[in-house]
Image (tube, rainbow, N blue to C red; front, side, top):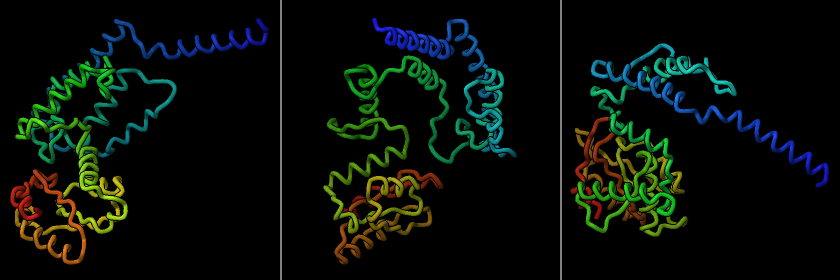
Length: 273
């Protein structure tokens, strides 16, 4: 073997060994895992013991600024310090979405069973993107989608997927509607969208991401309970059609973020038919 090749091989192996030693803390043994679990569970129990009397919103002076005391670096901080920082600067300030007093929107709920499920899913790290690599997770998602569809009353042919949140779900819905109506770039400037001022801000953002920034957006008047008025919607649609525009998308709400208003969905469907 050429001496230069042998030298390069030895240097490479030495580097790999050093990298292995550096990465070893990411694969803790059983004893260290137990310590980590105890610290995490103790923190969660401290949180849960206070949840019944916790404020729905905690205003703190620093607003999480203490996190800057521990910037991301090559060397870590003690576990006890990290947990204390988390509780003080992340868990405490702002909205307490797991509290029964938090009614601003529909959060994850802080359900303990769901947290355990998240833990097991994260540890096993199964890939659920395609059936071949994760048949079990894909079947679980399909079962949950089917169960949800049955609750809503969708037909047996209905399908879907579980999104990470309302923003990405809204984007997927807008893209699906765009493609179902076969809109092309030349159509966007005349394809009208109808919503109210109660619509979530992610919707107009999703329109931009979907390439529909040129689409006219109409804010439909509401009644005294912050619900879209079907008569005003019908009038706006008629006016746009008279102008040669293409009424395309009506975004109604089944519970808004600000007030919890539910638009009259059946009447809106009739008005926009």
